[in-house]
Length: 546
Image (cartoon, rainbow, N blue to C red; front, side, top):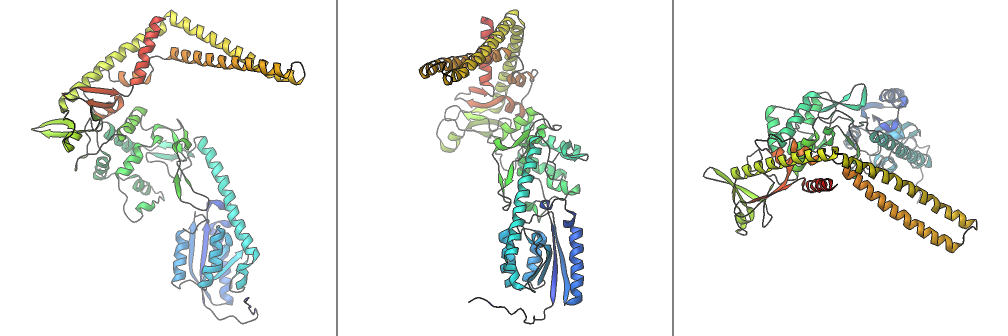
């Protein structure tokens, strides 16, 4: 049976404890009428007038500044709901319906269910003007539903516009984050530009040095920083007056951890590149953040001053791919940790100490009794690896000089000129053939050639085009090979160690992929640049033949 309300029936006398709820967020734009100050003023004026006519008092003012209205996870809003449950508040007053929520479903849940069940009076001063005590059925009217849907749609459209604007800025390499990465600060004259923050930048450099050169583990670095009294990134932001909040460390003092060290060691921003768009929210209503595949990130190179050079950064990435577990209590990694493999079973080598001598042995043999020991002393291994690298450096140096000599000889220059001329002619021929093939269709349609002639001639010219494209690709590849010189990355990697006298993890990571230990103490070193090395050797051979 339909519910019938006698509008003329007298209202029960109620004492109202009013909560003035104020919310401001990005979706409100620059509308001054939505400022916290103006909302507070409007609501206080309304409350003061009401207090003259009925028994109403101020229970509290609840402000959520900078909070979206698409969900109810707002600190002051939740506090207000708790006080409604406790009976402290029984009346909620807002400037308009969008202050309560911009989520259509949630808005109706509060208006048509929660507030009704809890006997809470809801008053909206405008859009729409509403008082659930004066007219209880009004919350179910079409006007309220339409306004609630409009409020959500406004948020959706704003979200699309904001996302588009942010993506445009990301694409241009402009920083749009709320907080600069640790080691940087925002330029006071341009908040989209990053400047080096010297105190924090020095810590970033130390972290990379300790990890790459000193062989310290990530947890070892974290413990050292804590012992030195260095604040972690979250604490550093707070110390510098930033309103930084991380839910994971809400009720405890933030400290350095292996996770925070990893975040720094893997951050490409320290190379001077702007890297953004690594996460996104599921939707404008569901603010759960999800990770984005790396190939969809916004990466713009050379947008700000680097803190770490590329060689050190790349070495750190290679080292983190290794099995670098340390013994209990150890904070430092050994030079060859993660690089040694048994040449027969392929398993890692274990480090052992016996009578003050350090040696490595096959873990399969040590733990399962399978395979064989493949034992080698640490000092013997280090001397062998050092000597091999020194020989490789000398060889690369000789090859670089040889390529320089060959490139500067008259014959290669003539070959290069001939290649360029041939490439130019082939491209001109391709353009000519493409034009003729396009004209065939017009000739057929105009009746100058038959359909059969068109098909036959088209096939001939398509075949010629494909052959020309293959020829051009071959010439371009050959010409590119001619341009290769001593700037080859593997040349730089080895030649910077011309006077190498000792090893550290950074050097090993920069040059070596793996070291295989054979039974009897023999070793095989797999360098990072094996394929380029072979290509350069072939290039030298080809140049000699020319």
